[in-house]
Length: 627
Image 1 (tube, rainbow, N blue to C red):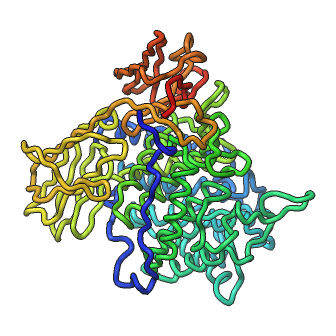
Image 2 (spheres, rainbow, N blue to C red):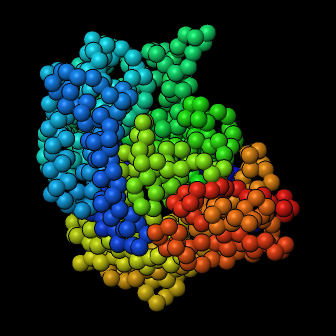
Image 3 (spheres, rainbow, N blue to C red):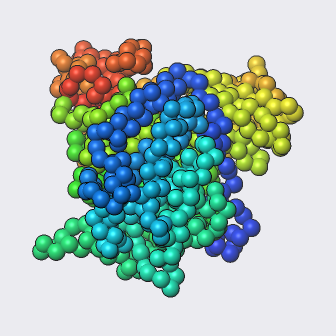
C-alpha cells in the first residue's frame, strides 16, 4: 500500500536562488509547448469528448447566453444605451469564455455556421464599446459615472476574459474586429491606471495573464509592462472597495481573500479565493518569464509547495471552503463539504503547465494530469450538457450537475478548456522533444527548420501502454524525453525491438538516437492502489482512496445498494478490473473483494452523477493496520 501526503512526495525543488541580474542571460522558459492548433487528437478517450464539446457543450452555452439568460441582451442594450442589465455584474465574462471556446473549436473543427454566430456576437461587443474604449455592460447600463469605483466589481476580470477570447479568435480566423475591441479596452485601462495615475488592485485576477497574451500577439511590450504594474500594486495598501466580508455590518477589503496582504514576490502560502489565486500565479509566471524575474519564481515555488503538499485534494481539486470559495487552514480538507470549484481545477492545469515550461520537471505535469482527469473532467457530464460548479468528494445523494448556473463561470470555463487540451501533450526545447501526456494524437512540429510529425497511439488512461513515433525528413538531433508519471512505479521502454534503460532526468526518460519512423514503446504497470492521506488531514483518518493510473475512483450507491454504508477496505482486499458501460461510455471499473466477503464496485470519479441519484464517496473506511 502506498502512503502519500495528499497526492505527492513531501519535497519540492526550488528553481534557483539567484537574483534577477544573476539570471539575465538565462531564459526562465527553456521549453515551449506545442500549441493545440498543431495537434490532432485521435484516441478513444478524449476524441469523443471533443466531439460532444463541439456538438453539445457549445450549443448549451450558446442557448443559455442567447435564449435562457440575458447575457447577450446586455450587450444589445448597452449598444443602445437603454434597457436594464440582467444577471450578475460579471456576466459578460461568461460570454467571452464561451467565445474563446468557440474560437478553439473552430481551430479543431472548422464550422462556418459557428463562425458566423461568433461574428454576430463580436459585432454586438463592438457596438457596446464606449468611444473611450471602455466596455462593460453592467456599468454602461447602471451608470458609467460609477465605473472604476469598486475594485471588486470585476471590470478588469471581464476585460481579461474578453482579451483572451479576442486573441484566440484572431488566431483562429485572422479577423481583427474583436482584437481591436480588446486593444481599445486595454489602452483605456492604461490611460486610467498606472505610474503617476490611479492605483488599482483588481478584486478578481485574470487581466494580468491576458495582457501578456495581448502583448505577444500585438508585439506591444506596454501591455505586459502594465500586467507587471498591476501585480506590483498588490500588498501596498492600495486595495479598496466594497470588498468581501463585514465587521459590525460595515464592509471591508479582506486582503487575504484578494491576495493583497503582502507584495506578490513575498508570498509563501495560498489564501482566499481559489480561482483568483490560480489566475494570479499564472500571471506571475508569465511576467516572470518576460522579465527574467526569479523573485516571482521563488515565490511560485513556495506557493506550489503550500498548495500541493498541504491544500490539495487527491482529485487535484483545491479550495475546501464554500464560505470563501477557497482556503481556511493547512490540511483542512473535508470531503462532503469540499468546494473544489471546477474553475479552480482547470486553473491548476494552467498554472502547473507554466511551472513545467520553466523547469522541465515532471512533478508539475503529475499535478496537471491529476487535476485534469479528475477535478476538471468531473465538471462536465459524460453527455456534455450538464455541469458541476462544486466537486465534493462525498455526497448524500443531493448534489447534482445542472444545465447552467446563475453564476455560470464553470460551464463557460469548461467550454474553453476542453478544446485546448492538446496544449499539454507535447513540448519542445533546444535539445529535446517532450512527451508529457499519453493521449492518442499526432502533431506537426518544426525541428531544425524541417516539418516533422510526432504521434502517440495508446488506450490510456485504461492501460499503460503507449507507442510514440517521430517522422522527420532527416535524423532527429534532439533527445526524446518521455514522462514517467509519478504514479508509475514499474515500467519498460523499447526502441524498435530493443529494450533500453534510459537515464531518467526530473521524471523524464531521456532517449537519444531515435531514428525517423522508429517506434518507441513504453509499458507502465498500472495496478490498483490504496492511498492514505497525510495524518494531519483529519477528514481522511482511518480511510483510504482507490486510484489506478491517473484516475481516482469512487463508490456510487447505484452500484453498491446493499453494501454502500458497510463496505470497508483492508490490506487483504483484492482488486480486479473490468470494462463496463457507465451511462454512455465504456470505461474500466474496479471490483473490490474483502476477506469478509464484501463486494464493492468503483467507477472513475469524473463519471459520478451520470446515472440515477444516489450517494457517493471517494474515501472508504479502512480496517487495516496504520503504518
